[in-house]
Image 1 (tube, rainbow, N blue to C red):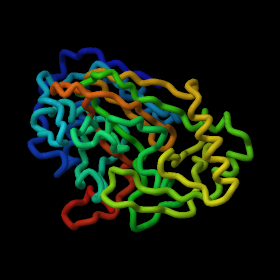
Image 2 (cartoon, rainbow, N blue to C red):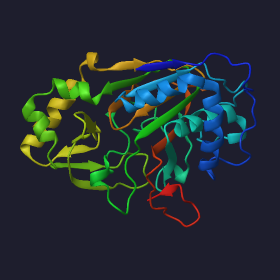
Image 3 (cartoon, rainbow, N blue to C red):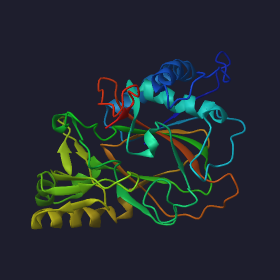
Length: 323
């Protein structure tokens, strides 16, 4: 993990006005204005963030950013007001712009909203999602049933997000985000299992956060990045092999991922921005017990893809909510 720390800059006002529009309605405006703000805050260290993500780093943390002085209570019913957390939102949208990326939503997930509350939802104890809390959320990448890498992208459906960008509002209970770099995992697998995981012999289901189940058939789990490294679409709950070799390779991968030393814990601190490469890293989170006191673990999450990519909107007039 690369950590970039922001030192206070007296010439940059931390209370700079945010765009006067809901970011779920106009994320591009937020990216543009917040990107200028974040570059001013980071100064020359902005290049470190861009360089880290361009050199196959799986996760980057930006710490020391300004944060909202008085956030509202954790939204246990998944309802939050953007005007109450403008600085956190500016931090995450600024990070998206720094990546030369665009944020987006899936029309069938998160009610088509770009901004996702990663928080204990009061009715989601046993849900395998970022809002579930009573079960371990095992090794996975987000939206693995969608395309990973441009060559296999269908024309009528958005791909999996390339990046997950998190902004930390509350950091207790202390529940780290655990990360396994795909390149390091592949190095530990037997050659026969790597070869099997590269063949299109897997069915992958959509996660619980989608409204209805979808299944993509005949996909590989490992995809070459074209530069000697690897992308992955592994999701421990939603992948199944369709041949004996594929099933055996999945078992070998799952066994390896049960080894503690392949994981790096990213401790979350209020105000941090975490940029995770969703293609190059698997992540997981253990179960936990919320305190229900209004200050439980709460992150804001954005999905992002390279700015050169434009998905197909599900509805006219909402260009950022894709099929």
